[in-house]
Length: 202
Image (tube, rainbow, N blue to C red; front, side, top):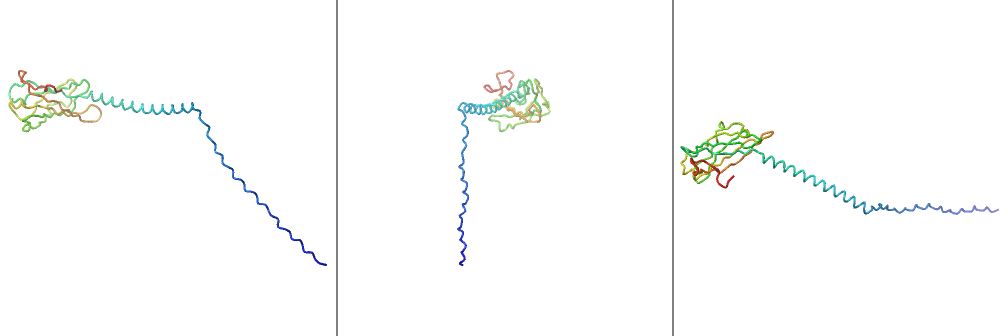
C-alpha cells in the first residue's frame, strides 16, 4: 500500500491589523466676541491708560508747584546805604535787611564787589563776619562797612557796587544759597549823597 503523503497545509495569510487612521486635528475656533463687548473693553483699556498718564502729569505739576512756591518764599537779603558824609564814599555804612516774613537769614556772608573802569584796582572785599549776626530773623537788620580801598568821589561816580550774599537755606540739613544784589551807584542828587539801586535795576 502506498502511504499518502500528508497534505501540505497552505500558509494562512494573517491579516495585519489596520493602522489606526490618524485623526485629523480639529481647530477649535475661539468664540467670536460681540462687537459691542469688544468696543467696551477697548474703551476701558484706553481709559485706564489715560488715567495713568493723567496721574503722572498731575504729580509732576504738584511737585513743580511746590518747588516754585518754596523758591518764591526763600529769604533774599536787601541792602541800603547810609549817607556819605566824610572820607571815602566806599567807607560808608551799609545795612542788610531780612525782608522775608517767614524765614531767617542764617550764617550770612557778604562780599563787596566794585565794577567799573577802576575795578581792577578795587579788589573784592569780604565783610567782617563778626559784624553780621549768625541769624537774622524776619524784619531784622545789621550794619556793616565794605573794607574797600579808599578812593575819592570821582572814582566812586565811575563805579558800581554789588553785594554777593551766601547763606543757609531754611529747612533740615544745610544747603547754601547765593544771591547777587546790585548794582548800587553813588547818587549825588541826594544831599548828602548815598548809594542807591541803579535806575532800571531791581
